[in-house]
Image (cartoon, rainbow, N blue to C red; front, side, top):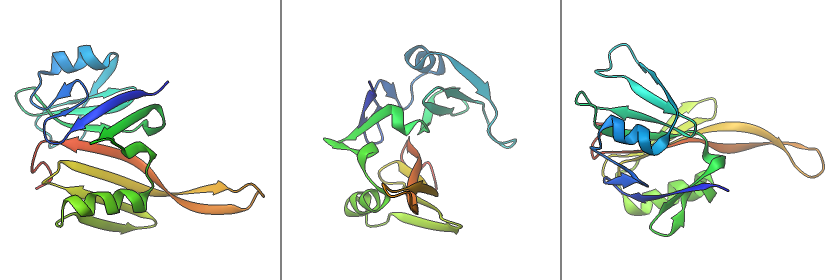
Length: 153
């Protein structure tokens, strides 16, 4: 059974609230490993089974990135984001933020970001096979992230 997270934009992701203390986030999400994402980061982050949580210099949650999207349901205003395809997600968030940033990095790697909504999605090309064994490319949602307002500015 998938764990459900109700998204309240710029406020919370399930029981994880932006601004929440690191120790409280760890109690909610369970077993973790602490690491430094980049050398220039002001603080370490925690990697949990289904997500990574990033903290500000005061150890308060400011960014949550989900990577185990097949194990969870992310629900935004009665819409299950984890059930949507790349075109559906781009359309959904474009309707809510006319300033949605879409970056194409080449090689099938694309991201969308909205500072106003505190959302980012990262897509990669993946190969799968249809019922007849024919290979086809699909856009796979690799990660879905939620953050405080203007996190990506």
